[in-house]
Image (cartoon, rainbow, N blue to C red; front, side, top):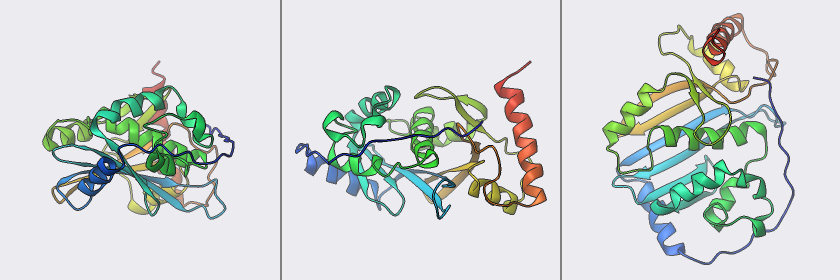
Length: 244
């Protein structure tokens, strides 16, 4: 689970002038209406501030598309029929073209989505985006599935879960592991854990997961409880990831 690094080249934003009105309608529908929101969060430990970052996917019900955003950043809307093409672009590693937009085709390359993916500037933010897409695919978030079905799939995420968009996967921490909140927060701050929250109909479901790759050491000092919790989770991770 050692942390990998990513690099990107600079570039200018191109202008794809289609379906703007439809995209705005999707974004408006995704906010302030009945729908489902998936939010993932972890510590951006490779940044100077080492702040937390969150990524969000909002899907109205009935689904007309999805709104994607890094929280407190610009948002972008993708139409329902463009969701699977976007996922396919992620599978094909098209994200590497995000800073050379003349090479990136829609839907990832449409201006509003491009403004979102260009905020990926570190391993933690890259992994947040991938985790959100991955989880969304596992739970059929952007689909005609009922809210109850999506929530049930989210609850059923357990232990080692192979990625739906690439190599590796996420390890969802079993809910029955004793996890003091302070220790959990310290592990999230260190990008050892990520949190995934599903919101719908006034309800919230929280799951913890181990990202695709984690720092070798603790970047931010942690308590003994956090170290013990990480040891417990690590042992489970390796037992399920690499069974004897």
